[in-house]
Length: 114
Image 1: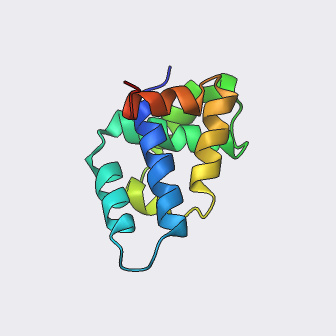
Image 2 (image 1 turned 30 degrees about the horizontal axis):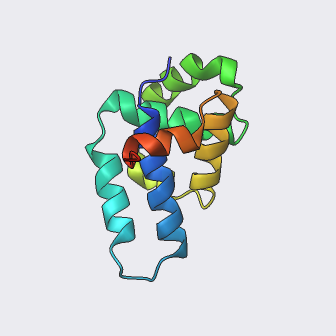
Image 3 (image 1 turned 120 degrees about the horizontal axis):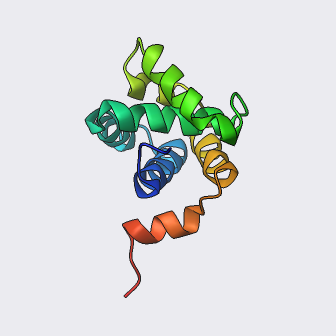
């Protein structure tokens, strides 16, 4: 079971893409780090697990195992680990897709249409 809301994953994807395309010193990295650091342990493990599913380390059917492994093997701050992955946004989006979750629908929870 996913331990982080799809909207929070979508937020990380959006911020990671802005960070990748951004100007050095713009504050995007700092903001993304702070957001991930503020997540609770379950959310951080869920975020890591979705990234692993997206890069094919785990299959979508192994999500619970991936979350348990993320918790058990967490040694560095999650934000450092995730931001060290240059394909973070793509892996997270691929992970959501593998889990049958639409990024577009998750984004609507962040930016609801009026």
